[in-house]
Amino acid sequence: MKDVVKEYYGKVLQGTHDLKTDACCTDTKLPGFIKRGLSRIHAEVTGRYYGCGLVMPELLQGMRILDLGSGAGRDCFLLSQLVGEEGYVLGVDMTDEQLAVANKYIDYHTELFGFSHPNVEFRKGYIEQLNELGLADNSFDIIISNCVINLSPDKEAVLREAYRILKPGGELYFSDVYSDRRIPKKLAADPVLFGECLSGALYWNDFHHLARHVGFLDPRLVEDRPLTIDNDEVAKRIGHISFFSATYRLFKLPDLEPHCEDYGQAVIYKGTIPHHERQLRFDKQNIIEAGATFPVSGNTFRMLNKTRFAAHFEFFGADDTHYGIFKDRGAAIPFDKRASDEERGGSCC
Image 1 (spheres, rainbow, N blue to C red):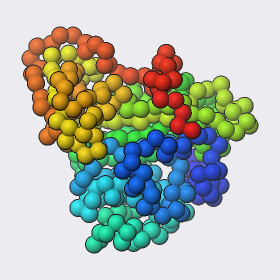
Image 2 (cartoon, helix red, strand yellow; image 1 turned 60 degrees about the vertical axis):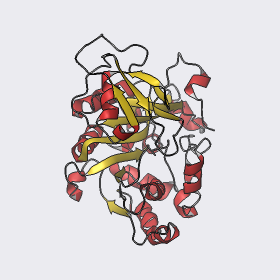
Image 3 (cartoon, rainbow, N blue to C red; image 1 turned 135 degrees about the vertical axis):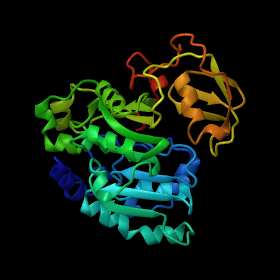
């Protein structure tokens, strides 16, 4: 399947317009500062964008970031602007044609952004085998990925390697395609369906299991939307399965609990995170208004208190008294069919 993916993304797809789903329609509701950043990226780079979500978490200034499956480098060059000259972005991809485009525009973007030296690097490699690139344990603050992990034949290895190289309190923040059921083996072997990020998609419950198995104990859903298959032939073959794009954040915090537990804890957001002064949408079920006392589960308390977010919150309560399961803001299911279209956000196209 690695050869299939290289062929599909290196030679079959010549641009975003060649895809057969609306997975890449992610730019219509972007914040203004993201749109401005994207407008500065060379057209040849943006024309080869095949992502399915927005992988720009908060508080990126000065961070060391790894992009798994960086393609032609669109997200890396956007991150380059957000981490600043003192930050660092490494993109890893296995497709020569994509890497050639990315490397072609390193100097172009360095000059455009006004940096004295490049803060972006691209390397050829496999996202399941980051150890072969010499990436050390506990060496990155944040790892992102945009619609690539579903293309890996060994998704557990990808998550395990990500956990290894993240610093304690670091974060894997990524978008990908998921399915509402497990994909039959016959369809999983189809090169077009696989290349379109459909037949390699994980059933969401299997993803949660894999994430917890490697150490990411409480996966948090940030946002999700249903995908539309725009090709009749593809829809006929796999249209009985529902697909959606979902963005998750996973923290390297080994003391998280399997469930969201209530210890009577709360936080107050200071409103000091750039571009999120009035509200922080930490995940789909924790939307925190600045200045308000906000009850949180023990896990959310730790995610805020033991990560780069700590300086932007006041914290109240300890964990010495347990009140049972934390109600109302437990684990969220991607694309919950019981929710309304307005609650889900609908399709971006």
